[in-house]
Amino acid sequence: MRVTIVGGGILGTAHAWQAVSRGHHVTHLERETEARGATVRNFGLVWVSGRSSGELDAGLRSRALWEDLGNEVPAIGFRPCGSLTLLRTPAEVAVAEEVCTRADAGRRGFRVVEPAEARRINPALRGKFVAALHCSRDGAVESRQALPAIRASLQATGRYTFLPATEARAVTGTRVVDDRGNTQDADVVIVCAGAAHGGLVRELAGDIPVRRVRLQMMQTAPLDEPLTTAIADGDSMRYYPAFAGNALDALRRNQNQDLVADEHRMQLLCVQRLDGGLTIGDTHEYTEPFGFDVTEAPYDYLAGVVEELLGRPLPPIRQRWAGVYSQCVDPGRLAYREQVGDGVWVVTGPGGRGMTLGPVIGEQTADRIGL
Image (tube, rainbow, N blue to C red; front, side, top):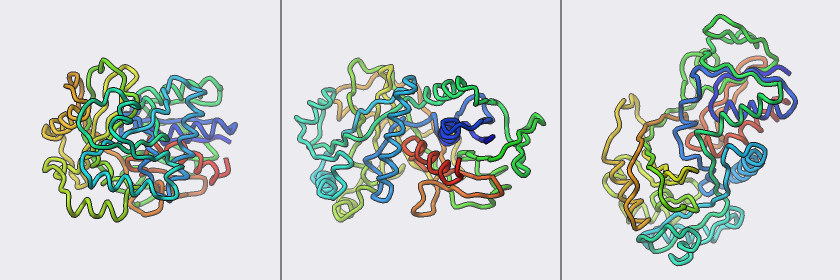
């Protein structure tokens, strides 16, 4: 088949990978010269640990797809680093202990470890915490390298064409018209426009059950030692459905977040890039219109938490940024995926799970279409 894909982020690229891998020809449009949205403004985490019970199979499948892709395209930087959620209060430990008693704990690679064991797993952790939740199934990729590396591999097949700086303006049947006046005729059109919910997406699908979420993050200069796992703090358990339960309810009743963390709906996630720098975040903002500027207090708070856990000063902060991602608000969906015309599909809204679940969302779409 001839497949035209609109949108060069992780979802569009995952769909392109699936189509080319199944023998089809792909034309791939991206309105920027490179993807510049949430796909490259994230941690690069493949975060199995936080998935709900209903999403766990998909999360594990997506991780397996990332690992296969990493073996085929080493430049994406896949590594099965696992994670440590560092716990600083008895209430946080209780949440971790509760999830470790559940039937799926083994599939997630969950276990609660004492500080000495956490430091054996990740010797850079010389700071203050009382226990840690180890998840051996989490991983990481290099979010700013992954998509160009995947595209280069696809182009080598001779069945993939990437059209950067090309915006799709209209879809008529399965013909895509771009802003240069060129047309792409296809058998299937898949629109993966990320957080752009208006314009072409609204024209094709109308008002869909998605919202936009804004975050703030930062990147340090290289740390002079390896951070062998991703790390998180106990606040992260407030934001992931895997941790829902009696212990989390008790934590929310009895343990308030820091005022800055609460105001900005914050958690700590931190992953080391291959160059040694640390990607640190993040905040959550749900009410639009979003500000165009970034707020300093969350950065100060996150830097302080990381320094407390590492037991040392951070390297200088080199970059700060904000990003916006698309989140489907329809319960039970990994993303919004609908056929909006004969041979035309819209796929968006994985939320903060895009990097984790992108490969499996692409696989599911390909199976559903019958590629």
